[in-house]
Image 1 (cartoon, protein in one colour):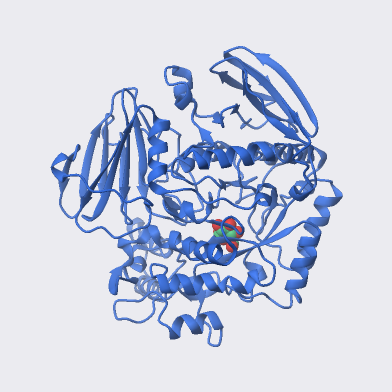
Image 2: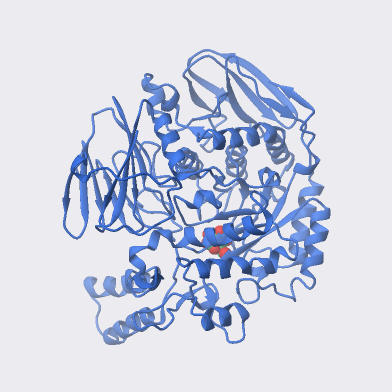
Amino acid sequence: MIRKFTFGNPIQTGAVAKSIGAADSADFPFEHSLSDSFSLELTMDKTDIVYGLGEANRGINKRGWIYESWCSDDPFHTETKRALYAAHNFIILSGKSNLGIFIDFPSKIIWDMGYTETGKIKIVIEGRDFDLYTISAASPREVVREFRGLIGKSYTPPFWAFGFQQSRWSYHNEEAVDRIIDGYDKAKIPLDCVYLDIDYMQSYKDFTVDGDKFPNFAEFVAEKKARGIRLIPIIDAGVKVDDGYEVFEEGKQNGYFCKRADGSDFEGGVWPGICRFPDFMRQDVRDWFGSKYKFLTDMGIEGFWNDMNEPALFYSAEGISRALDQAAQLQGQNLDLGKFFKLKDTFAGLSNSAEDYASIYHIIDGEPVNHQRVHNIYGSNMTRAAGEYFEKEFGKGKILMFSRASYIGAHRWGGIWFGDNHSWWSHILLCLKMLPGANMCGFLYCGADLGGFNENATRDLALRFLALGVFTPLMRNHSALGTRDQECFAFEEPEDFRDIIQVRYRLIPYLYNTFQTANENDDMIFRPLSFDYPGDKIARECETQLMLGEECMIAPVYEQNASGRTVYLPEDMAFVKLSGERVTKQKLAKGVHYVDVELNEVPLFIKEGKKIPLCKPAMRTSLLDTEDIEYI
Ligand code: GLC
């Protein structure tokens, strides 16, 4: 049962697709208090689990830590972080009863899940205007279904977006792109997409292509498509301030950019230097920005990734001058602990600063609204701008779109990737833990930068990361400028990589179908084991394995130098190892086992009485024969 409680006069976020009447606030079931913010408290039983918060840090069970809903451009996803790129305000408190809570509020929320007081969830909503939904159902899975019914169906990408995708911040010209495709083809490793990061643009300007690097872009795109490869360019939120640059001029002349308090356009620094930021909160601005993608779709582009849309602000001129003033005052002084660290923090705090966010204004329903009040829906509305345009021009499911920042509601317009992770072993597990959370909130098309974005990947890490990525709808290897080459063919013995990627292609019919079924049924692709085996203590506490669809369980290897892993089977299952075209099967009984998994093998566990289809591998999704199926 879903109940909605409305407090004050909430800003419409677009999260909910089905409108329901508000209940009497006298029936509000939680202890609460109201000042400038709204606080509520729930009591947890010792064995209750808290699921949710979508793409968030730490465990599947969110208990024991404090989180913040505040879309943040933070490339260090360490355990101590409270906020990452998304604000997915949905949790389920699951124990004797199952209660979902969705807080539809676009500014900051603090979720203290037993951090301050072990047995209490304390939620602070930094405002007075919001909708809060409660959902009670017999199981957490039912809670999710009801919630997903409320927020509407998920974005579905084209079929080819289930193929393997190669990205790196640096494929900056035709030769670089060709080298990647040739590298994959030569190593006979399947591939469907190559990404174009910011370097394809002229001076990092959205909706431009650098003619020196790509002299005939449309022809180049067509040539790649003839080879079965789609190019996927990046689009950033900030529009470079540059006289004569069409997008900037149009935005300026039509008043489409976010404002300062005095009505002038807000400016902040990102990759291109000083930028202005489209006010995606407005329908006319979304229509305008959305229509700009035409520049690239007209040249044959069929997919995009929207980035830096928290929005990321490296600095503002005002922030820099404040910092420089502070430095000037300290010049020549003997800096003690207090003074030195204050100075250091001032410079370190130039990026994404609260002062800068507080100086931005949007126009909503004709009225100026401070950015801080709607921060968490900025990126979502950028996705929506693109999604609305794509749907209108091409119909549903034709254009690949995924974003870095997101709020619930954006799941109807695009997918997400989990941002700038690291080539760390712990980030294999972090990706695994984010998957069910993202699915709960409607984000079905999602995945992490496989192999890790920041720092250098080792061969074994890349292989193990990819072996998990075999199952994520978005299977993309991406890495940062300046890191070691991370393409599958760049490592010694690339045939091991081929074995892993081929498994993905063999599984695409199954994975695609599982995706569609989950979407039709408002269900998850990936579930915590505790969803399926609520009475089983080990399953309830399992944070390293997931249920996949109705048939399978996945359990990736996530430690260096490990020749396998310990796995818990909550029931008898077939332990299957997939490697290239090879399949080995072994029956395992319910219980704990150590399973050996070679670097070129993908482990999979299939429940008794279930079967999954495998097709033959192919070099491209378009070459897959989805009729020629064998079953395991
Ligand atoms: C951001 C993105 C990353 C991209 C980089 C350069 O850090 O998250 O994926 O490669 O910007 O555009």
